[in-house]
Length: 489
Image 1 (cartoon, rainbow, N blue to C red):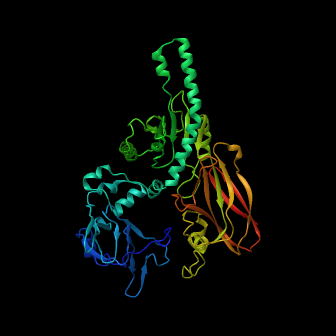
Image 2 (cartoon, rainbow, N blue to C red):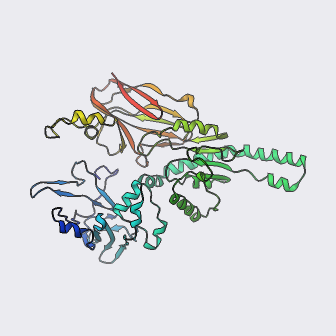
Image 3 (cartoon, rainbow, N blue to C red):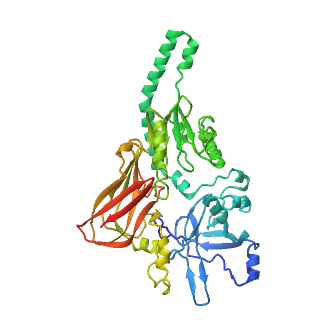
């Protein structure tokens, strides 16, 4: 929680949810069957109730304990129980937040959250015992939902459950992403429209000359739709957005049935004809060969590819997918994004150093562990949030790499980059991010605080001392979607 972008506001004092004695067998047995206990917590600050943050104090004995609190620098993170469906999320001093806490099935559950004030009672009470089927589901999001079990839908609506990864939720909240794609798609489709109209007129004239049939003319005058394929990973509403742009036939490549059902429900709720959106994998015999023509005699107007993973890395085999996609575009069609620029900067970050490798023998009580464990360290740290990462920038951002999906000869697979040092210090890491260009004017920045993407960083094996005014040369290589960044000594 201490690295949440923008920080957080504690609306109550910290409070004890429950105590578990792991040396008491009888208590452990009753824990899973005990009825939920009610807790009331006084509000000390005014604000919006978004979530309940949970951490632990591990009591080793009467004198020694370990805390996973956000106020303590440890290797642990905290658990977040989001609060949904309150009629009014705004609380103030004088209010009390009420909740029920249990450990049914040995999973900590927080449920039936409500707010009591001098003039009101606002409830978010829900029955969470209906969702045992969630435990059979597999992904991280599904597992976390089952563990926390803070289900927000009503019991009679559980059958419509659609569980998304946290990164997918963040993507849905990224308005700049959706606005950028909508503008870029509209520009491409507008540029193709005159050409399509001319083709329709030429066809109509030929038909009039050849057979003079009015019925034939009316059929031929119906314009062919623009075919748009979204092969981005996970849950995406870009095909629905494409469907709002006129004579468009959008295809989604989502794989999960619950995602397809949800997209259908979203289309229905937004008054789309049911046949507007189609699911591409239903039309493909071999799911490993997703990139194919929409029809034997048709080509795509737009193909949307996932170039950057939410973790901050380049998607595997993206250039190979781009090469196939270029062959499937109609004249004037585009791949989105059209090209990507990778940026980075030099930083001094003790936090990254300590989280990437074992430091010496002091931390391991004299045991010489570092030489063995550090052989297996990963050179690139992912899922970083630069806006909250404790670090000191030692240079300005520089362009490291260009990946061009539409014009591959402009790609730079191996280059040297000179970086001017703006502040003296020790270079310990090179964080990097991307500018995704949907066209020459519309750009998405994966380092933006509003972005659903995280950033990544190369952590150096040995820090490099630098002085202001010096230059450091970086060697940047890109091979089969893998990027390596080394400092040229």
